[in-house]
Length: 371
Image (cartoon, rainbow, N blue to C red; front, top):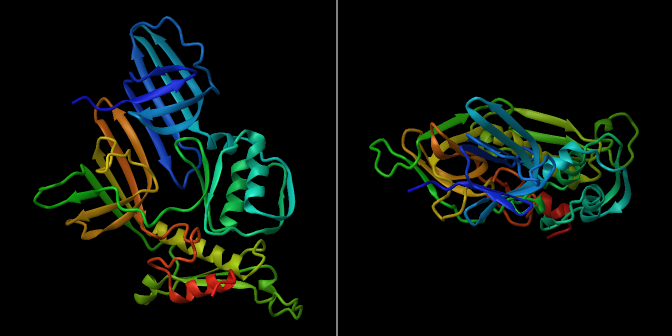
């Protein structure tokens, strides 16, 4: 059975004949990228629409996996023939490369801020996936900041994260941790049912914290005699897993942008979640490009891993993946998974999740005026 190939569509012209290609997607890295390679003995000329900067889409069968534009085209001619390499990124590439417009707003909603940042650059399709978003008292983006940096700043202030869907829609929100796992990766000692060609598990205590405290505006001046009524503005959370093991690794962060206790707590949860993500990573290589449910492997999916040699059996979060075709390895996907329910926890704060202590949930609800 012939492996699926990626189809590049640009200006009404399509091609799915490639000697090698890869499509990267990583929730933690802005601008998903792709690379396509073609070798031919003869090539009369490039299609007129194939130019750097041209918008394009990538399809895997009937499933769109990326919407973006071409960054670079390399055409090499030798006695052997023509070698063509096409490199591009999704629509986040524009936000990474270009400066944000000057923005100065008061009492602005998250939606208003996003529009001010991305709309001048032609990004009109966006969606906020969050139960609630804070109104910022003051937002000021100075010249020189990239549009992606500005977007990331306002997103993380709300405990959210930005990314682009394959159809080109900008999403600011968090993962759906209630979604069912899309499949199971199996590695048994007897080899029965194994469906991974390689599985690597990394665990680390470096940059991992048992307790994170964020001090907001004036929080660092509690003892200077200048009590403004906000001298104790802070938020603190702890990692129960490390606490149960008796490990004490505290971290204090000064964040002058935290305007209230809720924002300080949100930032503390974000810092703690990032430290937990650094503590575990699973890397797997599987044949083909699709999960057991028939959908292409996509960051944001949840995956069951059962590995006897590694002693793990649980659900993990697919943070990144690379769809790849090579002459040596054929068609395969590289998966990079992290701890489940440990990243972007505040998109749906009213719902208790694994890893949330009762105290953390109570603080979040109280800060939002919930009972």
